Image (cartoon, rainbow, N blue to C red; front, side, top):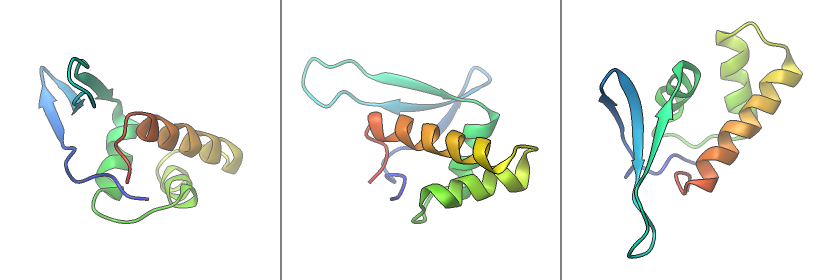
Length: 88
């Protein structure tokens, strides 16, 4: 999977956000605020193919988490991106 290059992180009012346009006419735009961890993952994975284990490995390298927590957090992060149509 890969982060769709049409989505970009923007800094607005001291927050890092991604705007997700509605898929159908009349759908609202969604604003996704990225916390420090999400922003770290985004910047390290943007422009490359990755799998859940790649996300977990980044979490293990950067944060003091155990393997189980890293994989659960990686799965949750990927799910959020998928649900918002950000992954291809």
